[in-house]
Image (cartoon, rainbow, N blue to C red; front, side):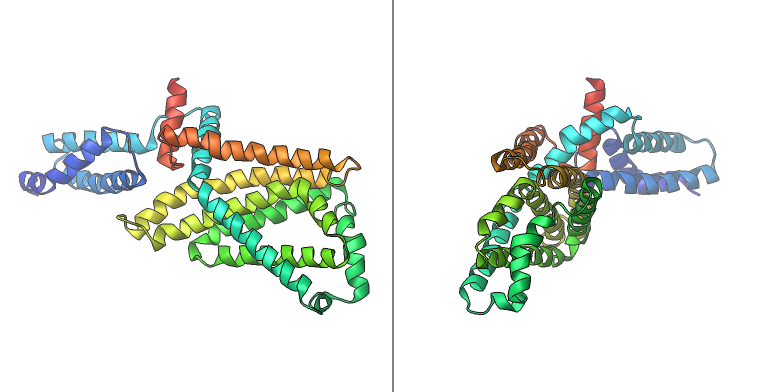
Length: 331
């Protein structure tokens, strides 16, 4: 091997990797370039060492490869610091990115549910298609309320949590299709509209809102967040901008998939409220107030803490999280 010629051909690429390895990556694209450049340079170094174990070119490239590997493997971060950085920086920043899309999903749900409920309630005979007069009466006067108290507290809470967490995770995971989220949100909205129409037909519309208000505020908002995250992932490859679709999907997917972790916790909280609070014989203002406080806490976390993380340079990406963890460690 002519090492001088080999050095001449690859010098620019090695120099670009060395410059990238000397600073902390700022974007997902920087991370991708760093990893790809490291793999190529490591292969080049193996060829050089195979031809001549010790050369100036090989030693210089070895240092570059070492810097690159250290940059993306990093210095081990204390687990407690990493967890803190995730919940203080990465997760709220990722939620902040989808704040407006979350409101659009919420608005779409309300509109569809309202249209369905009004149409069924005002169309003669429409309610009757959902069951006999006796079954509709029993649903509105007995089954709707009994749903929250027929099962044991722990088992019911776990059932609600796992079911809602599965739906939310599916929206995030399959959001890339661009179709799964609208379908799921539409189905959820239709079901709400049908239930409201049946309750209204029996003069129990007030009970409908009263019984779902304590837990439903946070539960529904969590579903809206999941839908927004899924749509955000889909939009990353539908309209990637100046990035390639693969780059956009990798960068945005890394950030928005972290939302799923947060949804597990918000849905756990709403499940606890549904399983513990809703069934209690407490004044309704107290029960609804507990749900409102829980929703307000999540909104503060998304809009206020997320806004601070965003203004501090966080976008919810993995590399931003690593920078934040390192900063917390240094602090």
